[in-house]
Image (tube, rainbow over all chains, first blue to last red; front, side):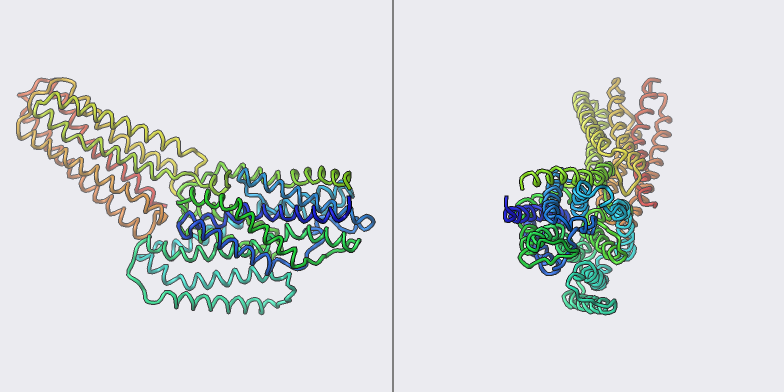
Length: 408
Length: 225
């Protein structure tokens, strides 16, 4: 078979990977907004689709590591670059199969961990156990504990703050109205920073910390003033129901930002390996970093939107239909806690998973007495799914790698 | 198809707990009619009513079992599982009392009560039923309490409701004392078996309020962090 066929194969598998990202991850972030009645199913799918696509294409990254997260040294493939091209195609397919399985079973599996596990698989069979950067794999293992714990702690603190400053006041609706501009401003500040640090760094803007900080602050102040303006005169409604009405807007905004940030971060898991295969076949050499052309990003963004439209909407409907007890104040607390954790984590260089962090944040809000009933028995099967990710993806990748070598 | 989020969120037991208390109250609502049927010597009606109380008690038990099945040890709630199950037990005891009362009152043909005793008994029954209704109001606030994390002004309102239950239960106790005293002033008019049975019945009526009060005291623990 010709390299041309390999390119087609890589393109299709990349699309399949992007489809999976859209089918599951996104849906969980938007589902709670549907459950709390902040958005209808149609609105949630449309909002998620637009923001994921925008995130993926605008800040998805135009340059990527040849080997995702440098888990395997690409130098070992210098003599036979096509091996790396086969391996990356196999890795994409293996990770996508694992994600597809996880979507069917409803497991919160990290896309990054799947792809990294798959790459380590063919790295081991090509270059031996020594090829894999075990310290990098170690940080991933550590993130199984770190992501949910930090996410949980942040969720606990954020919800406690909402409770003490808003819910426990004499007039929660009034307190929420008073705090809404501040919360919106703070949220915008954090999320702008998150995007500058995690997504936009790929644009090579080389922003100094005070540039980023200043920009984030400017966005925050604009948001603050906008909310103040929109609120207008204080209204008369009081009580917990009116308070939740105000949180509804904040929850929609936080879900929108999670979708945007997710598109920006996770599209790389689909388009990165794809871009690597194209670069290798094109140039016949192996380099440390490869460019990601716009059309590849478009394919990735489109894949996520298709995944959302063909399967993700079902997950949103399921989540939205079953989780009606998560009121907007809780949804806001969990989502904003996940966003804060991701920001701090990426700033400190911790490989935090968005999905794992969200699991922790939900439980954290529960510990602050925010959730009516959490099924902690499920945590065990969630952890098992995390543990299985790397060996499964690696194993499937090895099989597919041999299969590809046989065919080509 | 599943989602980790949907499996992480369990069904809330608070809704079914309210459903249970409503069924319990339906049991208690029949008690005045049971007493009236007995006092007016309408045995046919008494039998029908007692059967109906028993049927409702059974329905309440089914809801109770459903709630218990729904709160496994791995369930994480904003309140302690032990406190929640004790609220449920106290609710259950109210219905059990109503049923027991029906059984006792139809055990033998009861002679008519002197009117001063009968009046006090009906007063006690209505007071106790009022306490049960108030305790249902407290349980009805559980949804709001979950929404406000068992704190803030809504929690204060519920605490005030519980104080009100305390006061009414105390008033019921006083009526029960008076009832017993009045009854024993007329003791010579009764056979020993009747005295024994009436005393048990009075206690069962009073216990409706006692368990309603006990239940609201357990709810109070939800708000003590």
